[in-house]
Image (cartoon, rainbow, N blue to C red):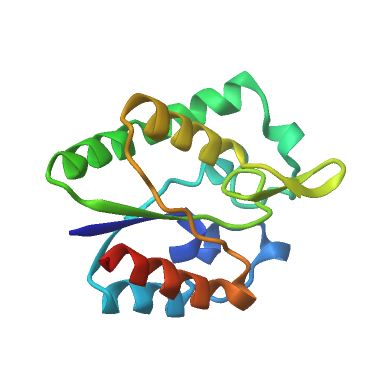
Amino acid sequence: MRIAIVSHCILNQNSVVKSLRRVKGSFKEVVSLLIKNDFGIIQLPCPELIYLGINREGRVKEEYDTEEYRELCRELLKNIFKYIREYEKDGYKFLLIGIEGSPTCGIFKTETKDGLREGRGILMEELLKYVNIKHKIEIPVGINNYKDFLKELERIISSMDE
């Protein structure tokens, strides 16, 4: 009874700005670890792909931080919120996996005009604002520095078993 809510590009690196792709296809080790530990997976939408298309250039948070882009993020999250509410009613636990440095899906750090800084990306701000304020759902948040990420993910998953 656990659900991983993952950034779109964890499962589909084809959606990333081409020069920023880290792997072909998907992060197989992450997906394998989630499946091995009996997680269901909800893939978040990729607002950057919808907003600027597949051949977009990389941008920083300030360039995405407009009311139009935030509204797109909230609109794309509506069905995700419905999923969360339904699973929450039945006692599911949630794990959120983002992409460190992403202006949209960063959880702890995001790329700004001043470089990599502490803070969340736009989609994660909107998601966590809704989840934590409106529905009081606890979501343990994983660090996505891939070098240490798998170990951290395993630690978080183990702590969810307790």
